[in-house]
Length: 278
Image (cartoon, rainbow, N blue to C red):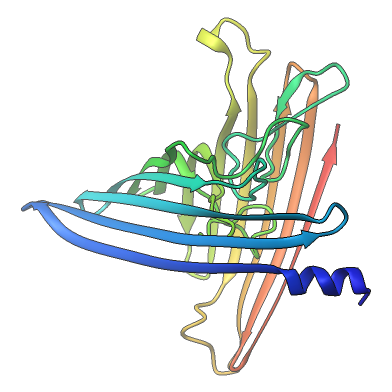
């Protein structure tokens, strides 16, 4: 590598610490309440970095809390809060959260976007800093028609290129959407349908501000912990999403395909994301 990059790695130091807590107790005889949390410490010291020989030290402390109430065996309610203190000298660019992502067009019209890393010139994306953020607020209800969910829920898909709900102290924010979803599980095959809201008109007077996506997901899987006689387990998924924003005449078709193969001592995975539209 070049001397510049060599010097960069020699003078840049980052440390990461992480802890997770889980508590479970019964608040009432018929209601189970689970409290889980996580916290991290990420620090960085930089000395005379090129090209301006800048030097600074900074750290951030992300903290999360998740409450799960289960009044019955088939009904669960979730509430999640995140907070991140940071003293970085510049606005952070953190991947992860799809609740508040947007972009602007040539006419400076703000358009919500269904991607975790959509950003304009002045809006940061990812976990907000120095203010509590409602990351989850939804319920799930298992009935004869399938698993029904509604609210602000975590989303994960494939290897995490599009949606990633795996919390990490250095990246923090989880992928979430405000949606209504129905999942049907057929054993080795399951399907999910989502109606997602990325924007809503004020007081319902105009639909110009509406930003909505309709998504269908399908999985073909085996349990990685119970491989078949061949010793190989699989997880293959396909999803299609249709996103539209009336005010900006934005229409996006999103196709994502992934595959995971679990061998006795090896994992192989691939994911392909195909967005198109205008």
